[in-house]
Amino acid sequence: MNQLTTAHAEYSLARFPEDPRDTLRAWDASDEYLLRQLDGTAALDGTTARPVDLAGTVVVLGDRWGALATAVAAATAASPGPHSVVQISDSYLTQQATRANLERNGLAADAVTLLSTLDAPPARIDVLLVRVPKSLALLEDQLLRVAPGVHEGTVVIGTGMVTEIHTSTLKLFERILGPTRTSLAVKKARLILCTPDPQLAPAASAWPVSYTLPADDASLGAAAGLTVTNEAGIFSAERLDVGTRFLLQHLPARTGSEHVVDLGCGNGIVGTAAALGNPDAVVTFADESHQALASARATFQASGSPAKAEFLLGDGLASLPPGSVDLVLNNPPFHSHQATTDAAARRMFSDARTVLRPGGQLWVVGNRHLNYHVTLRRLFGNCVTIGSGPKFVVLRATKR
Image (spheres, helix red, strand yellow):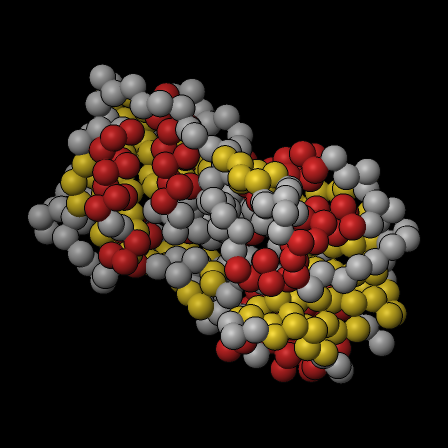
């Protein structure tokens, strides 16, 4: 846990789940810059700015770990007049972090309304704060969703690290909301200042999108010919990524009644392939992303598989009973926003070991250089290489 200090307060903040070994903070310089702009201690030209009036409905879009929502909720609680704070996030972990950070800073649970990126946004937005996401597609989709609620008097401020804000980022704000400019860089962070143009009439979002895997590609196994649906922001949303392709090429052929988990399912290609290969299976698609689970549900439903499917939004596999799973399939991420880390993979492997029955198996695809076999041997006491290529490996660990 760390202390975020602003001009008027200090906030105790942590990521979720809280891990004492994790050295990453729950905020960065771009969050600090935006909060300085709100309280009037930062300006585009380095002069003193006026504090932003937080009356009305404040929408915080793309908050990473609830730092912005917590600070804004604290500021509005001390201000007169009607107000509400709404956080819109694709991440279950972000929502849980926000709840925990509100509590540890003495704020009521209902001080912030938590919406997913698939929920209808507020009909009127008076202040829009945007933490620029890694995915340009997700940014476009979300700006298009909130645009109808933005009016001529809406204060629109975006924030991000210099490496996250590109010309294409600014063009999206300009095209969807109105004239846009950027700030000076401070601690490698920038602000995006946008003046809403009520004359703009942006089109509806183009997401979700779909593509169909080649029906004559035998290497894809049961996934050949599958139509894959993707909401905005899903990894490799417009084509099959090489890592998933490599896992599909080595997917185990299994039959009979069993419980299979597609852990970190993304658009659900792997879990759907397992369901098509074994109609008697129960397949759980698990992810912390609302967009991912919606994508996986659509992909599975389009497949026509008779297998039973369940869709689990949450913190890994924490809600599944120990010893209840026969097979876990996993293509773990190795980034947490801009940070490169194996923390998510380690937690996924540990979760898999907990939920697997004795003799159950975890199949993992990953880049060769990540050395997942070391972690798997430490956790499971064994690890077998099933497939090996120039860039990827498929590994199998068995619970003894």
